[in-house]
Length: 116
Ligand code: SF4
Image (cartoon, rainbow, N blue to C red):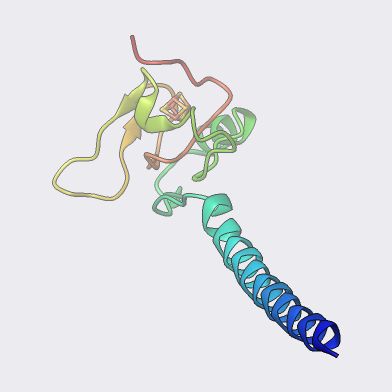
């Protein structure tokens, strides 16, 4: 009889421990799942695509060099390119010594060169 009570007690304690572990474990997994999108969030720069003042050949050059406002490689962007011209007077877009028109600090093109 005593053995049965102990056995039942042991069962209840074990069930409580297992249940608590499962609840805490699933909470931790749920928290980690929520953090993942933040880690993968892509950094976006200002929109610098107003090419209205450019000549057709200047627009064509931007296209040929595949200029984009948001770099596909965070390690390579216009802000750390040797050809980048920083924005003036708190403007969101800078310039470039190679292509005409506004350039995003988070932009990129196929002519990217690292700053020395
Ligand atoms: S050369 Fe390309 S990557 Fe470098 S600043 Fe100009 S547009 Fe950006």
